[in-house]
Every structure is written in C-alpha cells, then in structure tokens.
Length: 143
Length: 134
Image (cartoon, rainbow over all chains, first blue to last red; front, side, top):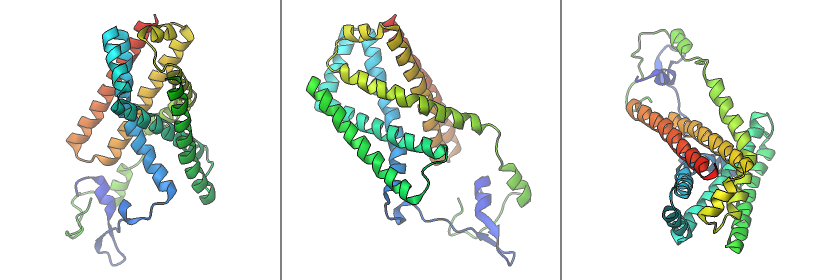
C-alpha cells in the first residue's frame, strides 16, 4: 500500500480474510452514451482552452509591444494553421461554455432526470456547433 | 492502486477506523469549489461579450485595438475577463492534475507550474491591456 487511497481498496470479507475490493470497469469497456462524450469533452476543451490562453497572451502582448510584433500575430492567425487553431479555439470555448452552464444547473440541483440529462447533452453539442458556425460565418463575411 | 497479481494486505499500522478518520474533509475545499463556480458564472456574460468583440475586431490594426481599449468600460470588462479567465483556468487545470497525476514529485511540479504559469500569463495580459488602454 502506497497511500491512504489504497487502504480503501483492501477490506475483509465475511470470513475475515483480506481481499481487494472490486474495481469498476474503465472507460474503454463502456458504450459511448452522449452524456459521457459531453462530460469528457468538457475536460478536454478546458485543458485545450488553457493552452489557447497562450495565443490570447501572444496577441495582447504583441499589440502592446510594437507594430511589427502585432503584424506577425495577425499574419499567423491568417494562415491556414492559424485559422484552424482559431476555429478549434472557438469550438472549444463554446462547448465549454454550454457544458459549463449545464454544470451550473446541476450545482443548483436541476437536470438530473435521465431524459433531461440526455436531452441537455445533445443541446450542448448542437448549440455549440451551430454557434461556432454562425460566429465563423459572420467573421469571414467581415474579413 | 492494488496490484492484481499480489495478495491483498495492509502495511499501515493503523486501525481501519483511524484510517477512515484521517480521510475526512480538509475543511478547505469549499472556498475553491465556490470560487470555481462563481468565476464560471461571471465568465458566461464576459465570454459572450468577448466573442462578439473579437468578431468585430477581425482585421483590426494595432491602433484599432488601442482605441477599443481606450474606453474605460471596455478596459474594465477586459480586465474582469482576464482576471476571471486565469483564475478559473488555474482551478480547472489543478483539478485535472489532482485527478490524474499520482506520482508525488510530478504532481507537485505540475501544480506549482500551473500556479506560476497562470499568474504570469495573467499578469502579462493585464499589463499589456493596461498599456494599450491607458
């Protein structure tokens, strides 16, 4: 046993013998219900947005530094790679935002019924996807 | 975690009750939990405003950005967004590391790196925004 969490994994059965408690099956065993996909995407997009703040920092710091530095960022964001990164950033932001609102509703005690749970999972994906497309349509039209 | 090939055994000289007592609430988690939710609530309107602002800034020059931040209200909103974003991000990334990284040295290194990086990036953004706007 290396830490206290291990202590909880070992227990005595009715004969008094020490046994390992059974573990629940890991991720890859389950079918993928939509709620599980939303839950995982919330974490993945959260970490992704953390990395994305590097881009925000670069943009803001360059704007405060010099015309040349700012021109470099603006050039990068206009390249295919830059546009792809920005698109992923927009989608991640909206997925995390929609899913986050769902989390806040749970914290307030709403939305735990299985039907509501599945429905709101789909709503998160659909709204985030449509909003991303809308934002990009407007953005590209201006550009 | 227990090794499947090893017979289960307990190496700690503490009674099960003593171990269970040591596992209780640390009386320090509620503030962090609440801070994460409150920053999330603040970030809902701030993020929507930020997306709208960024879309209208497509193709903007440096002078446009400076003029945009020249309005005190915009500057205040931007500062609020940055403070909330980096605070929320720090708590979120720390939670992920606490959940998945078990090796003590790696865990501590990751947690301290997150604290330092979010603080520094946040301050760099705030300094830049203030320089442009003031």
